[in-house]
Image 1 (tube, helix red, strand yellow):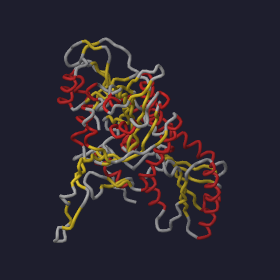
Image 2 (cartoon, rainbow, N blue to C red):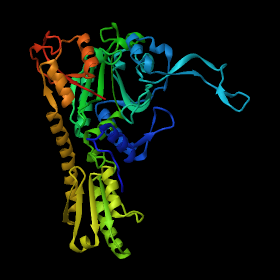
Image 3 (tube, one colour):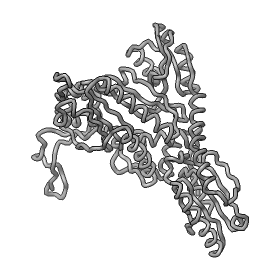
Image 4 (tube, one colour):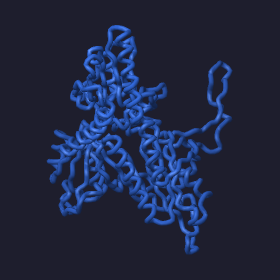
Length: 490
C-alpha cells in the first residue's frame, strides 16, 4: 500500500493534513469550514466519549440536552460573554424558503423571525435561563449537568479537528450554593481532564491558570490543561471555568439559603472537544501513520493470515478463532483480516497507517512451529513468539505500549521545556527550538500583548504546580513573583 505521507520534518502541517485524510479519520465537507468525521475517526471519538462520560458520572454528573438555537437577547445579558463570542456567531434570521417562480429556491422575506436565533457557540446563556426555573432553594443545589453536543463558531481558516466551524464537544454546567463548592468543582473537573489526557490519551499535560486576558468570556477564573505537540507548538486540551455569580445575576437565578436569605447561585462550566483528536494525532504519530494508545484504539490487535492454499487458510483460521475468543474475553478488540482481495504487505501497511497497536502475522510455517510474528506499532519492532500463552502476552504488551507512548511524549516535553531570563534568549529559543518556555512576566496585559504581537507566542498558563520565585519580567524588567509558560500554539 502506497502511503505517500509527507514527512513531519519536511512539512509538519502538511503531514498532519494528509494523515487525517489518508488514515480515514475525517475529510472536508461540502459546507465550507465543516468536516465529515469518518467511521474510523468517529470510533476513536466514541472511545474518548465513553471514557469521559463514565468519569463524569463517577463524579456525580448527569447528562441532559439543551436547544441548538439561542435567542439573540440572551447573549446581551452578560456583556463580556457576548463580546467574547460576537464575531464567531452564526445567526438564523428566517424560517422559510420559497420558489421565486423561475425554479430557484430563495429565502422568503416575509418569513423573518421576530428575534434572531444564534446557533449555539456555547450554552451558558440558554442553560442559565433554564436553571432559573429549576432552582428555588438550597435543596435544589447542586445541579451537576453535562451536555454532549455540537457547537458552531464561525471560522474562516480551518483545519480538520483542530479548528472547524462546527465541532463536537461536551460542556458541563453546574450550579452551587457557595463560592467554595463552585471553586472545588472547577478544580475537580480540571483533574478529570488531566487524568483522561494522561491515562487514556497517553498525553502529558501541564495544569494551569489562564491569564485575565486569556480567560473564557464571562468567567472569573479559567483553568486549563496544556499539551506539547511534536512540532514544538502547544495545544489547549481542556478548560474548566469558575463563572462566579455572573450568569446567575444576568438571568436572575436566585435561591433561598439555609439561613433564609436570598442569594445568587454560583456557577462553573467546563469542556473538551474533538480538538482532542488533533492532539492525539500530533502528539504521537509518525511518518508511517497513526500511533494510537491502546486504550483509545478502535482495533487493538489485528491478525493477518499468510497462506497459499485453502487448507493452510483453514488451519490458520481455526487458530485465529481461538485466539480471538481469548482476547475478547479480556476486553481486547481484535480484527481478523482474511480479505483475499489484498496481499499481506498491503494489509501490514494499512494497519500501520491506521495505528493499530499490535499486529500478529501467522503463516503455514508458523502453524508448524507453533509460533507467530508479533509487531508493535509504537516502536515498529517485531519478534517471533510462541503461540502458547499468546493472549496473556498480548494483554501485557498493550499495557506496555500504553505506558511507552506516554513516557515518550513526556520525555519529549521535558526536553523541550526551557527556562529563560531575557527577552533575547526567549526569542532565540522560540525560533530555534520552540516548545514550552518558562519565563518571568510582569503581570500586565500590555506586556502580554506585546510579546504576542512581536513573537506570536502566548502565555499558555500560569502553572498550578509552579513555585513562587522572585524575579524580573524578561521584557520590562519589572518585578515578578512566578514564572509562566509561553509557547506558540494551535
